[in-house]
Length: 212
Image (cartoon, rainbow, N blue to C red; front, side, top):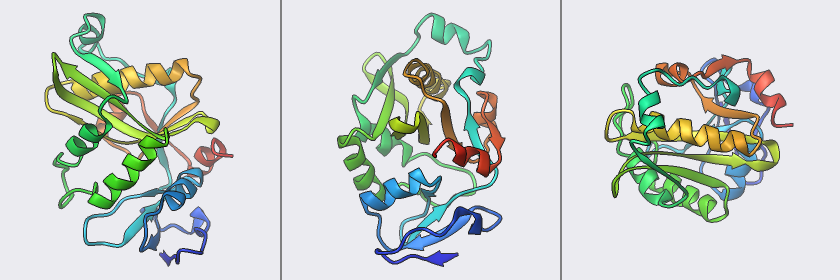
């Protein structure tokens, strides 16, 4: 683990520990966040901690052409049981994501500092969201960082207040990004939920190749 001062660059990601923990900073500037994503690094920490930066190996990713749509999801999509919008209420999505209980995690990693930073990135057109609605009620959504020049979307968090809402939003987002020519969706770390949607682990070195 390396402590990085504001004027220092990140160390090589190969120096991360076996869990992917790489470095610590005291600040969460927009420039630091953008530097991190272009190097295959992302922030993940809890309120009261310094900023912790990670680059796991292997890396969980989704190739858009490998997206899996289960039989149970097809009626939701074919019948448009939910409505989908993009970038219509980013702040509400990140607020809802911050309230999701995650097994083994004490509190939320979406701290006020994270929220402020990603809202600024949204205003810059770099952080994007998908919103899932049931009539006029927000029932699911997701957000992440869109590295357009790299044709890569870095998913950050998703939520669902009703069954299948997050899957609906994820599938719609993937299809939209695929139409825009995206090559890869970064899912960061393994979860059964993401694996069920077609995501899989690849070596970090292979993942970094998409950022060059």
